[in-house]
Image (cartoon, rainbow, N blue to C red; front, side, top):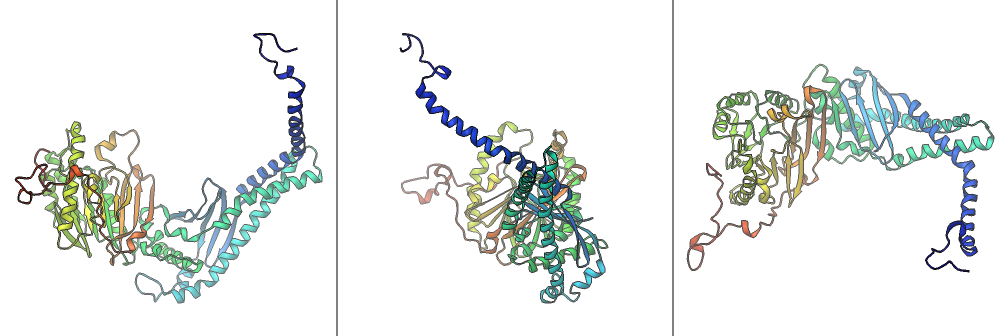
Length: 543
């Protein structure tokens, strides 16, 4: 007899026999599966936990590799990486593999005279004689490979032992439970190690991250060309590491390491904003990285007051050419004060060549302090001017290699006309590759100046060293340096720029029709030209 009118059909416990017939087999199957897995699930989980704990606590080993004692260790991590620590200099790290584990190698003890004896003392400046050095390092390579194999075996045994030890968590310690816990430990160790061993690429150290003392950064990360050689074998990588270690330990007696001369190095800074500490950092970096020039892409000042010009006397302290373009916080008086230094060159729709690289600079067309409400108007003006900047680059008899501007908007439609753009303004690192043009935006070497003092969080001091290929005159790598407030931290991140090894081919970006300058009147049929006149590079006194 069906339900009465207006009453819902019976469900759940009151459902009919057909419904119960459909549900009961599935429920019974799930129950049987749960009962079958229960004796396995808990021991496997316990074994995996025991393996992870034991590998984390005891996963370290000391090994003698030539003149050095190396401590190897492993730790679970979100991303696979390897770290080489060289006390007291710091450490270099790279993402070398896939898998939730980090490998660490720490030099605990080094026989420096023995290390130096292993290197070729007769090598020419800036390099080593690789055939001789390779033969000398062959025993070290074998010792390192042997130590790595022993370490992996140790980790596997620790995983198995940790899984077996997890049996102690159970009241009943049967042989079957012991085997299942051991299997859980083996599986957990395999999850940690197998992906790492299958995907490990020591060549990832071509683009390392350095953390430690500022003065030893160039010695440990090496010259940019080292990374671009596309090292493929362990032997070649050991040659590079040994060379850098020798430089690093020599640096104990020589605080300024000597870099090779295979690239043209340029220190790129911006946004000093009156902070003397910014100049202090820039001078250290210029010396430590042995740069051929300093490029300052603007905002040395802040409000445009006459006393601000006193900061420009720091420019003459640099021993290399100092190239400067005005930012939106620099007035004409500030630019004139910078130009008074004998090593300075202020670029305003003009060019200069340094170390074979041709730089073309364009001053910011606005002076914005106190005019924050006009920022949208200023931004549109800069994008319009960028069209003329591109045209000016094309009109030069010798094409410029690098365009210097303060605000990236001033180069927006100049992309594709020049190989490289260096800019600032954003107080943060950035990079892009558009139509063959590599744009490198540096941070604030002055920690944002007065604005940084008002910030809730301390603004780090940042700069970058750009490595140019002297043949293509394009950047092949960039080292981004970050110094925390009160020098509490320091890091160098290297990015390789593969396009730098080939010659630049112009490929201008498309300019919107509304920004295309109208033709001159004498080229327009039927009378004077209509529309916007050609855009010039010089800015009016009031934008």
